Length: 305
Image: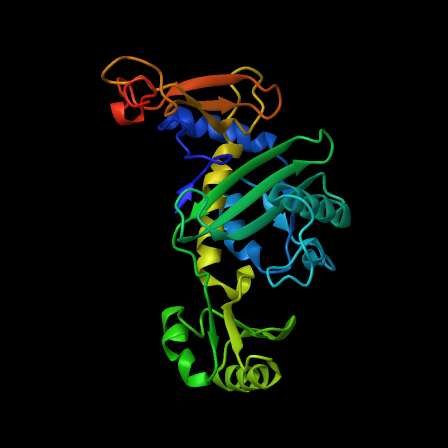
C-alpha cells in the first residue's frame, strides 16, 4: 500500500516535537470544524477518527445517492475522472448539509498502473472548499486489494475462490455470464450465495455464474483499511502549511526527471526530485529524492542509446 500524495510517493512529513505540535494546533484551529462527507457506503467509519484528531467532525448527509456518480458493477458509468467523481460527491454533500467544506472519496480498481498483470486499487480523497473553489487532493495505491472474480459452472467450483477472498467478511456480487444481469450484491451468507449462483447459471447462455468481490467500501474490509490509512495521511496534509502563503494542504504533486548517469553524468529520465506545491498560491519547491544518488548507465540515453 503506497501513499501517492497527488499521484506519487509521499515524502513530506510535518516536523516533530513540541514546536510542531503547537503549530499543528494552530493550523487545526483555522480549519472548518465540520465538513460534509459524500458517502452512502460507510466511509465515515474509516475516516472520522483521523479527522477528529485535527478537530474536524464529518457530517454524512441524508438522501445522498453516491451511486449516481458511478457504480463498480457498471449500472451507472462514472462520468469523467476519479477526481471529477470525488469532487461531485463533495459538492453534493456540501449542498445538502449547507456546509462550506465537502469531502469526496472515490476508488478505482483494475490493473496496476506501473506493474502489468497484477491488480491494484487507487483511493482518492478531495477536500473541496465551496467558497474559494480550492481542492486539496491526495491518493493512495493499494497493491494487495481484495479485488477478484471467478466464473463458475457449479457452486462447488467456488470453494477455493470464496476461501481466498475471506468470504463472508468480504461480500460478493453474483451476476450472469453472457448477460448484463446482476442478481445479487452484498452477499455474505452461504444460502443466498448458492441460490443466486444457481439462478445465474440457469440464466446464462454459457451456463456460468460470475462471482466477484463487492467493491463498495462497507462490503470490502480491505478497502476500509486503505481508506482509513489514506485519511491519516490526508489529515497530515491538511495540517501542513504552504511556506509562502500559509494555506493548508502543502504537499507532493509530482516528480522531476533528470537523475544523472553514474558513468557519464548525462541526465536520464529517472526522477531526481520530488515537486512540492501549494493548492492556493501554486508555489513550488524541489526536494532532492536521495542526496548523491546517481542513475545506473542502463537507463542512460548516452551510455545505452
